[in-house]
Image (cartoon, rainbow, N blue to C red; front, top):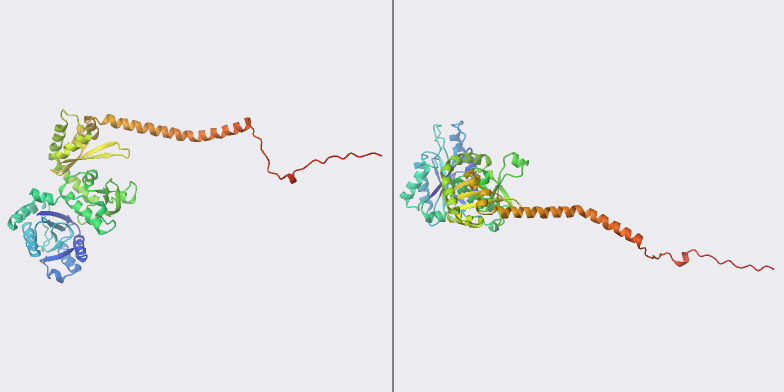
Length: 418
């Protein structure tokens, strides 16, 4: 079992996300705990008002909503009753047993899973701390539930393979429809919860592996100035296709503001993992002369992905390392100068070749510009030469005036004198 926990400041969004799934036939509400009515006897507003009675008791607490998903191995055939039991056990173990919560079963992915919506404000107005709950209470509860219910353990290799993040297949996504958002969401969920990145560029290095990118828009645009963010599907050539999906439309709310908080938290978490990447790079390049593709392939065998950043001319100006084992992401220069894009290319003997390509491209561009500048002059010279040639070598021309309109001289008749 894999548990993913998200907190937010607005419980209506988490509730609305699940209720919309129900209305579309992609989910079913299984259970309502600590409500006055059964789940089947309440509409959206009945559920929302009950939650709001709790949140109104503590207006100082802004983060007052929790949205949990419990994900099971595809091979596990769990009944609705069993899922309710697991949900109740989980909420009891993390300290939310007396809280009002709703349990939804979703049918929109390849593995069975449930979503739980609740609040951390208690009946007396006190707040349940959710700091590090995902890492501490939730992780402990997961392990105990796996044992108690005989579930496949998240640590097992078999489970890791079956729940592996699948890249988005651009050709199978119906752009502009809900399938696009669902495909992106299936990648965003595990990436945001598992990987440790400290910038949007590092996050995009991971997302690119799964054919997705996060886009802020062009500098100076309204979206950029307002810290907007959209997610796009990429085709096989890395080009954005289809319609972008706003970050705020996903239930995990991967907005730029929320991501920046995650960037700060991840900075300390990833530091102890640097050594594994640098040691592997040094070991691979120690005493060996590898080409850049050979270097990348060697790192892939160690479960480290290499993402090169290139300009439109193919010039490599940056490198990002994604450690698939520790789920840590590092820009090359953050590991040290010897692991930056330029130094790695030098160690692989690629810099000279790349510089030659750049020089060649510059020379070609200069020649093309020179030819373009000479074009008006060449046209002028051609016209002048034509004029000069016509003056030096005149050709006989024939008029088009009809013969009867041409003026003729009359012959003077000789007069005879008498």
